Amino acid sequence: GQNIDQPTEMTATEGAIVQINCTYQTSGFNGLFWYQQHAGEAPTFLSYNVLDGLEEKGRFSSFLSRSKGYSYLLLKELQMKDSASYLCAVMDSNYQLIWGAGTKLIIKP
Amino acid sequence: GAVVSQHPSRVICKSGTSVKIECRSLDFQATTMFWYRQFPKQSLMLMATSNEGSKATYEQGVEKDKFLINHASLTLSTLTVTSAHPEDSSFYICSARDGTADNSPLHFGNGTRLTVT
Image (cartoon, rainbow over all chains, first blue to last red; front, side, top):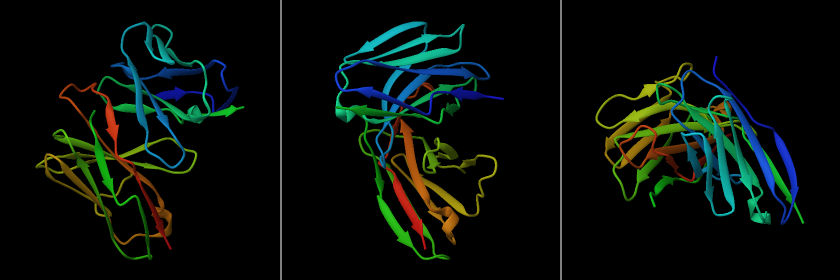
């Protein structure tokens, strides 16, 4: 079957750096997405990786290793507003999105 | 950037009634829209794929007669929850791709929180 694994919850301190990992087993691979979802709101797009390596976008970076079935989202200079759930989603060979359950990130002052 | 508008944001209805949720792509055309349901602390669950001008494609286990989807134009899809029951209470979210590529990122509406009493 297809599976996306990410930690359920993480805690970090304002101003620090946090890495949220995502591992996947899917039928084919057409890219991996990271979304941010604040409580009670819809997800918003953060990043897309289809080739191995690191994609940097401001305070957020996303890394992909296709051979390892692994990605991480790196958040730097954490702000209180970064408290949210972070969803990892993989697009399989049929271009269907397989969603992880999300990682709830709690930022403490 | 691409904007998807969803209405209403919240609705409370009585058991047995029907509720219609609208999803509009405001600055792009979407031949395909996706309807998701999300229960508290759980992942997004794809319910159906809405196709403009044709029938929706439902995921396994989703009752097509209960969740009616109409994609009347390139910018509007509607989901009607018919004969709603308390177990239908959930967060419903629509999304669409801005772009023709299958791997274009999804843009989500703000969601509709449905409470059935």
